[in-house]
Length: 348
Image (cartoon, rainbow, N blue to C red):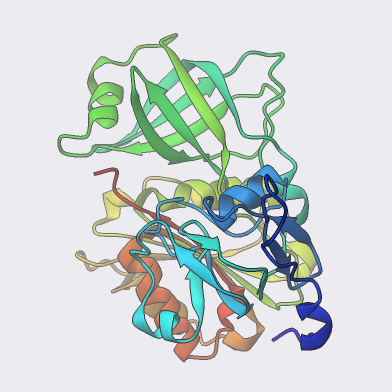
């Protein structure tokens, strides 16, 4: 926990008073000293983005839990339902920054994420460059944006794809390419409006729009000895992006890619070809195959026998997997701050 002098901090708080027409904007102070202001009718996350300050987030709807943070000082109010906040988190003074507004100046036990906040969120036209089936219910969609758009993102982030009023979120599945093209991996969803379009009606050169880059899921340099890149299903997309961006084992760390599916067909990528020294651990939950772990990805991670105190985990997949994996790994020694996640939440 970051310490501060209560008396000196209290002096920062200016009374709402004031003269007619004046409007008090509470200050948000982060653990590394970054300060920005936030209106009492906007979320902390919205204010951070307007100030070009990046703090952990993903879904912006209170459902993924990525933006959970301890409040060390000050009061906040709920302006959107904190669906993913657990009772224990609430009782320990944690909030979701995408759902809360400040009532007073507040001090949050979280650092800003530096350069990831410098890439502006934009809405651009894009065209479908190619459609490639990966298995029976996953396709890879490659998009191209105008060459003068200079769209920039950090490996691990996602975009919103927009087609005639339908908007859906997809993680980018590639690191930055010289040709500027963007890859996403789309799973067929029963009665899913966007997936139904992409699987049945979409054609090369179709004109769409995208919004991004979004989210803060990305690789962080630290002193951990082990890095675990963990995914289920199409959660492998942002993991693939991170793998490509690393290019080689960073700082001689031991890299483990743990990817889970129900049956072997669900593991639709050949990860042996990636230019990164790593150990690949395939995991299946409904099909037993020799040399493939049978069970859940978090249990496969425990089976590696690593010292989790010296490990950083990047996890992407369903809300249930993210929550269960975090709980299991933290109970077994992983530092909560070393668990980075991007939970896929349904659009309905």
